[in-house]
Structures are given as C-alpha cells and as structure tokens.
Length: 416
Image (tube, rainbow, N blue to C red; front, side, top):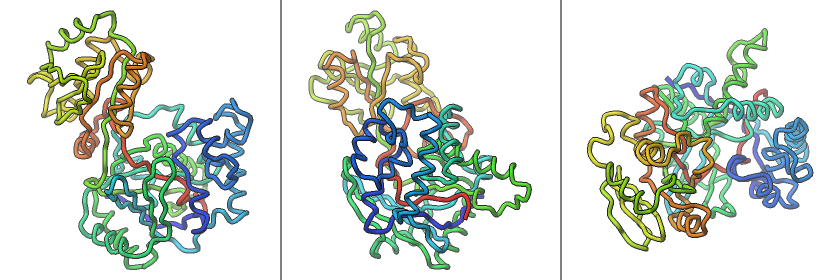
C-alpha cells in the first residue's frame, strides 16, 4: 500500500510566485531558458537550468553549474524569494487547459515504495540522465521540481479536492507561453491531512505518469542518504520525495507523433503499396486528418493525408504492449519498412508532441526537413496502468502529458 506524508514546503511569497515559477528543466534548452529568465534574478531557471549563469555554451554538466544551483537555492532563501512553511502540509495544485481542470495532491512520496514497486513505472530510464538529476538533488539537498504521479480514482479524495476548489487559492495565475491557469491551495487542517494520508494508504499502487528520471534520481538519493547515515531510523525527511498525484481519469494524454527524414530508398508509390500489406490505406486529401480511434494512423506524405487502419492479426488486444499503436507503428512501419530499430538513437526520426497540432507535422514535412509524418491516436491512462501493473515497459516516445507541471511553486528539502 502507498505511503505518503505532508511536508514543510519551500515556496515563493504570494506576490513573487509569478516571478519565481518556470517551466520544467527538461522541456526547453539552455538558450530558451536564458531568454525566458532574461534579467529576472528571481527566475527558478537560475536553480534548475543554472548553466544560464555562465557564458553561452557552458555545459549543463559542468561541476560549476551544479554548484551554482546550490548557491542560488541558498540565495533565494536568504533573499526571501523562497520561504519554508513552519508546519507540514499537503498542497493541492490545479491546472486548467482548454477549459478542463485537473486537481493534484502534492505529497511526500515514500522512497521505499519506489524501491519495492508500489510506485510503478512504465518507461526505461537512462543512467546518465539519472545521474544528472541525482547530482542536482545531492547538491541542493532538495527536490526542487516535483514528479508527476497518477492514482486510481478515489471518491473521498475527490470530494476533498472539490471542497478546496471552492475556496480562494494561495496562488492563481496564467502562465506565460502556454497560457494555462495554475492554482495552489494549502491543506493545513489536521483532519484533512489525516484523510489524505489514510486514503493513499488504501491504494495498492501509484503510477509515474511523467518524470521517470526525476523519480529515479529522487528515490536513489534518498536511499543513498539512508545507507550513509549510521543513525538512520526511517523517519528522516530524505525518506520521501515530492510528487504531484492526480486522479487517473482527470489526466490528458496527447498524441506523440513521428516525423521521418526519408523513405528508406522507396518512392512514395512504393511506400504506400508496402503499407497495404498490414494496413487498409485510404487517401484523405490535403486537409489535415486526425486518427479517430485505436489502431488508426494518419500519414502525411507529399502534401496529402492518408488514413492507415491496422489489419486484424497485426496486433494483439490481449497483450498490454501488443495492443499499443506505438508498438504497431514501430514494428510494422518504422522497423519493417524504414529500418529504424532504435527510436531513442536513430537520427532519421524525430518526435512531435500533440500540443503542437498536425500543422507542425505539415510544416516540418513541407519545409523539406522531413519526408513524411505519422500521427497516432493517444495512449490512454488505463493502458499505461495496465502495462505498469504487468511489469512491462512501454515503447519509447509513447506518451505526451499536458499541461506540464510548473516548477517553483513548492520545493521539498531533504532535511528540516
């Protein structure tokens, strides 16, 4: 069963939150972070993208860069741009995108739950990326950014969330660039805190939705601190890491589409003919066409859209992996026809999050940068949970969650 606890969040004063908050470290590059931070010395980018504190071109993995993150974290607290709450709280974080609001509970997730599989993952992690985030957690001695979890729908927690949603939030702002609304409430009532703790204790599993590397790094540093502490008793703050947990049914997963540089030596006609072996191919014309259901794909080639419907027998609806459209397209198109076997390393392919729309696929193909594009039907949260429960791993580049969590609203220190 899942163990969570409240914690003393480190937060910006209400009047400073919009200056401090930022996008997550991994959705933009160094120069984008430098531009967004501009001359704002309170921007969290000085902590989560600290390479911007050095001359352009400085490696984000430079030892000085990590040290700069720690120095700026201390500076933000000294200047009063970040202040730690005096008591332990849970927090409620709401995001509104396109008129739809999802409510998350910000909790201290238990390191041991990650180690034992109570916190379930559905993606592989890379050791180099884990080590980068571990260095950042170690040097700051804090989880500066949250991870993104899902939990099975829970009526008791939903009623609590809706009750708080009717109250005035501590933070309420529209974020620049994405234009989404972000709100935060503080749960300080002891009975509500007890309810949250007890309801999570009934859940057999929590699921990592987004942030597999941050989850791994946070948990591994916590376990590392436990091993290094001769007086470890299991109650230390480093036994927990910060997560925002949303009800599974509230989450929005967008399509994660593919663009490919060539046709692997085939002509357009030969490619379309080859597709007919495993798909029913229907020409749709110049107007952008979005897949309407599972096992349907949209192909954009030579300024024309096509519908591709996988034929029966090409997939296994009883297999949590075999039923996935990312698996079907990887096996039958990218590998079989294009010779692209490793989606993580092959430079002939790139990926486009669904928030950018089909227009972005058209733009990249029409510009000549890419030869063709493939749009997929989004993966469902139920599919992700089924895969995690089965102990299997999703194919790479399968999910794109929106909206992304804003960073800087709450930070979790590993020591009081």
